Structure formats: C-alpha cells, structure tokens
Image 1 (cartoon, rainbow, N blue to C red):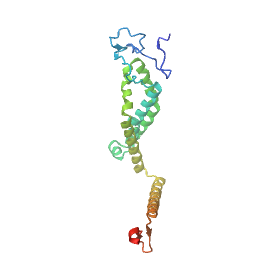
Image 2 (cartoon, rainbow, N blue to C red):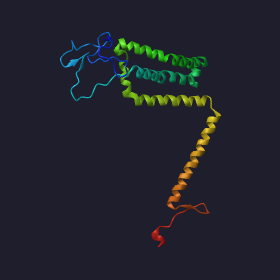
Image 3 (cartoon, rainbow, N blue to C red):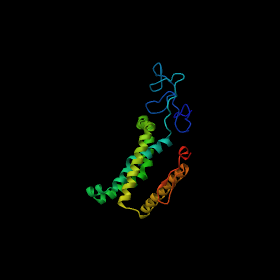
Image 4 (tube, rainbow, N blue to C red):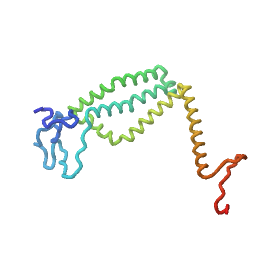
Length: 212
C-alpha cells in the first residue's frame, strides 16, 4: 500500500484520493476515525444521498496553467504596458521603463518555476492554493480584464511606434467595409424595387392600388 495514496489516485493519476480528508501533514486519512458524527475526514459534512458531488480540485497541470495565465495577466502584461507609457517614462525615466520591460521578460522565464514551487508547497500546505479554486467562478471577469490589458498594451504600442503597414491596413479595412455596406444597401434596394434614375434621385416602385 502506498502511504501517500492509501486509497489510490484520482483520474489524473497524480492527486491522491482522500475520501476521509487529510491529516495535518497533508497526507490522506486511512479511515474516518476521529470524525464527529455526521462528518467525515477533516470536518466536511457527509454528502447526503442525491446531493451533488463535491467539486474536485483541479489537477496539478491545470493549476500550472492557471497560475501562469494569472501571472501573465496580472504582472507580466501590466509591466510591459507600463514600460511603453510616455507619461511614466517622463516620471521615472526611460532607463527605468526599459527595466520594467526587462522585468517582464525575466518573470516570463521564471513564472513556470514559481508556479511549480507553489504547487509543491500546496501538497504539504493544502491551504496555500485554496484561493485558486475560486478562480473558475471569476473566470469571465478575469477574461475581460485580460482582454482590456492586452488592448491597452497594443494601443499604447501603436501610438508610440506607429507602423505604416498597420496604418495602410486600417485604411484598406475602412474602404472594404464601405464597399460591403454599399453592396448590402444596393441588394436591399433591388429586393424592394428601388432604382436610381438619371437625375440620381431614387425611383420608388408604384403601389399596386395606385397603378390600377
């Protein structure tokens, strides 16, 4: 019997099953001895028949992805955006703004190792990453925040160093959308029987009752 996983492992093959909760050292309990009546393991109430199953904790791989994504969104991207902000450059100097951009690169390199360290810590201190289990409930807000940060970074970068190709693409995009709008209106006019006469004034169809 594996002392670290006396009840086997979860579906991910990494997380030990803990039907009776965990001991103080983080290892699964072998039985429910010591639990109060109506409870099992580390104090969680026993699930009543027919009630929804308890939500499983994410696997280590999922935690790694979540931590790296949060690090990029909350730390790395803001540092990159700040390094390109003209107002901040005037306040702290170009050299320090360059240092912020360098910090973003360094953190990008070490973020997976930092995440791995937190995951290892959580194996002996289950509460170390308890807050991460709530991230899924806040995912829509975090996604909106991440998009906002990325858009802000792109806009600042474009104004600091305008790209002629991007500008040309923007003008082409405007011309394409104008033509698409014209084609859509012309198609609607044709369906309704409206045409343009020689005097450039719309010629409206004659209602059936007036034609009679």
